[in-house]
Amino acid sequence: MQVLAVASEAYPLIKTGGLADVVGALPPALARQGVNVRTLIPGYSQVRQHVTGSPLHRFQNLLGATADLYAARVGEVDFLVLDAPALYDRAGGPYGDAAGRDFEDNWLRFAILSRAGAEIARGALPNWQPELVHAHDWQAALTPSYMRYGAISQPSIVTIHNIAFQGHFPADVFGALGFPAEAFSLDGVEYFGGVGFLKAGLRHAHAITTVSPTYAREICTPAFGMGLEGLISARIKVLSGIVNGIDTDTWDPAGDPHLSAGFSQRRLKGRRVNREAVEERYGLDADERPIFCVISRLTWQKGMDVLAAAADALVAAGGKLAVLGTGEPQLERTFMSLSARYRGRVGVVVGYDEALAHLLQGGADAIIIPSRFEPCGLTQLYGLRYGCVPIVSRTGGLADTVIDANLAALGAGVATGLQFSPVDAQALTYALQRAIALFHDRDVWATMQRQGMKADVSWDSSALRYAALYASLADGATA
Ligand code: ADP
Image (cartoon, rainbow, N blue to C red; front, side):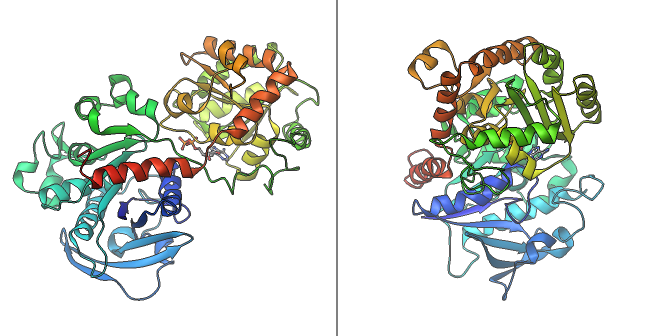
């Protein structure tokens, strides 16, 4: 099967979040299922450098702009690079300048991307035409709308990676988007008096997915849907959740170059060496108290204020805390003052440090993830793979990937972590106390670690689900 993916970022070319990981990792996993994906991406400067050869196609008029389309193979992914330097080849990131301000013409930059996607679906390329189009997040979400109004009939999917970002623009951009006048309506691209890119895609795609089954349910509610819950609920029949995988080569405890010692499910011993390295790096007392780690943006979404509020209780209950993160300055200060107050028990590194993230997963006993919402989440998956027991709030992908150590699960030996709810200091404290009690029962804890390490967190099982969805849409079963 031939699929066109449309996205605004893809690892390893350009990444600001989990979206890029999915877009970069899914095509090779889908290839193993017999699905051939080509991924359309804007020609940012970081992307252009991979382009060689002559263009496959020249778009003479994409909403008034000309753009060349190049092929680029990077790793195992086939990219189609939309080269329009005036729009994409800029200093800064994919969405804004170096100071973090969004580009003012983002509506045009990503409408053109989507328009190009629709034209490729129509048959712009001489030798290749997709049987299905998969658009990721708001930046690509007009693709199904252009297909719909352009009478381009292949099935389309929109995947929501984080519904907080919707691409909502004032009504006066509508005229430049190239839609017929009737598209400015409830059934079209209109959204709260303006133009909603994600809204439009959710309205017109044949199927909607998001990155976990629980998040799929949550975004049908006002608490999580951020205004789109009504539309999504109305389309619940075509909505599904497919959990992300992780890169099991980069995250492999047996061969991870960032660890002091490798280890595996059968031989957990190496963890001790890593544990000592964590204690040393964080200035924590070298003792048998459990080390809880955090690897996170320090933000409200991630529940970091809740963790800070539970820190006294964590220390009182006999735990140690190692924090790695950057984010809101107030939270950074709070954690720094906790480390000053509890020398030897709380250590904090403010910064982004990939190597240290690996060491923490390989040496800490547990990882705390108290997110208020979490579409999928990656750090709990790394934790499972590294025997770093995840302690998570019961939301989104966290709820779907961690099996809580309740009595039944412990009895059956299937628990992989702890869940708590609601997201407040009291519930988190209780979960931490439970974890500390379990930690001191060595066999129980080791069983939990091994169960987690056995969990399938690879892209292969996710790719199977996407491939099944593609096949059902191509058969017309879901449309
Ligand atoms: P989100 O994308 O919402 O931040 P995820 O859990 O999906 O949350 O992904 C976060 C990714 O960023 C993980 O790979 C995690 O290891 C990494 N990460 C977050 N903070 C840091 C940090 N301070 N240092 C190193 N890696 C970090």
